[in-house]
Length: 87
Image (cartoon, rainbow, N blue to C red; front, side):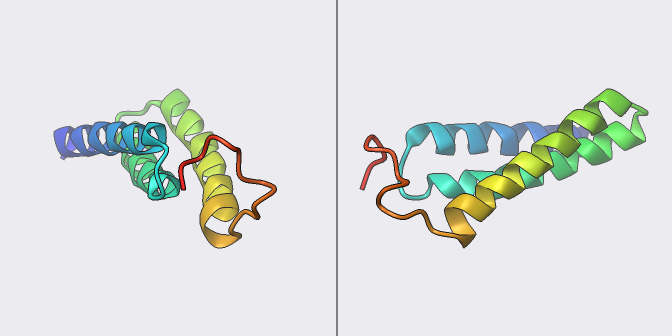
């Protein structure tokens, strides 16, 4: 179970990072993938008594929720999208 949580948390974190760095239309979905990673790492942290990991991932959950709100729920207007974002 622990190895599964650790592997899933790492894999989804890596996939989310690559998706966000690719700067493509699907990049905002990286925040959703990051949430999956956070959930796995929080579970891992709770099961291994790692409060620092749980605290850090909890803050990341809030940051990812903000990203989901700003980029998926409330679509940015043309003025809010940086010029370097691919069409």
